[in-house]
Image (tube, rainbow, N blue to C red; front, side):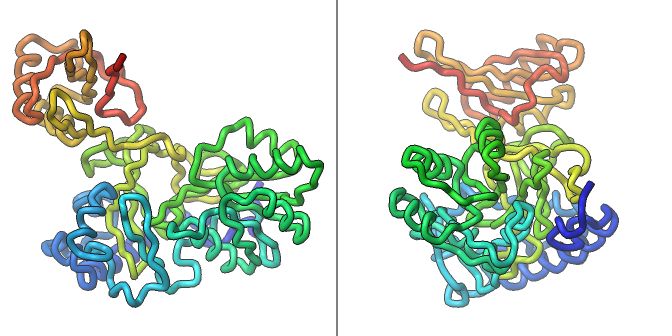
Length: 415
């Protein structure tokens, strides 16, 4: 049973029809704004009627912006590759992530929208929060800091490292809430236990790493409730857990699509694919169909906590499976091009191996009825034409390939 006080606002519990209607207006307005104000989108959306982009089908027809392309775009047009609406001078901060990729921080109080996830984790006004995400050049510290302060919390900007000093601060100030990576929380708790020092944390929100179920259980047994969220420097909050801990609930400020890696084509619900996100409320950095490079899948149904938005299974790996075979780069998009050219092929996976230290690749195709020699020859010809590398073809029955989002499986072993 859920309690209305457990929810951040009414948006979390609205009906599917109300959400679709609200997001339709927001989506059309955001597409119009991006096209009018951001040079990159002025070019790529030039032929698009924003008023017609009001649902997922229309959104899926728009081009994808790939995170993997940001470095080159930004190098050609500093600092943000033409994807921001105002100039960099209108931003509160500029961050740098590995690449380098530069990320803007707008003037809004909760620019990254993490207050919603922190609220789901039990953070409330007046809480003292020990924030251990880095504040140095990368945006992690500010992403959580801004959300906590928007809730009315007080933040200790601890950052990473200096464990002994942090334990002194925790002992003196007694913060009740933790935000940071699960691994650093484990370090803090282990060091405190070794020294016989109490840690007053009762709740936490973690991100940025895999969160092992065993850790969740161990912390729950010591009275520490810790849930996780999924956020990026470019988008901010994408999805978050609730105490129900059954999948991640998509944030109300974005639309999430799961697409076949290397394409912009949505996959059926439940199939693993790449996470593509469209921001609805961020006017400074209005990313439309931003391909994160992360894998996930839609989780059926609604959360038992009463929040009604779509759920995803959380982070399931990386979608960028580009590999080099016989000196040539092969991309997931090329594999999908091959599959689309043959109507009888339902799905395909390129398996790369190196028996006798020689690269080979085989396109394993799901085909009803087992396929034929003629089809194998035709597909092999398409593989060479598209990928510029010869490959073998194998057939399996529909549904045989694993549902793990892999389009290219590199099984080479180097001795």
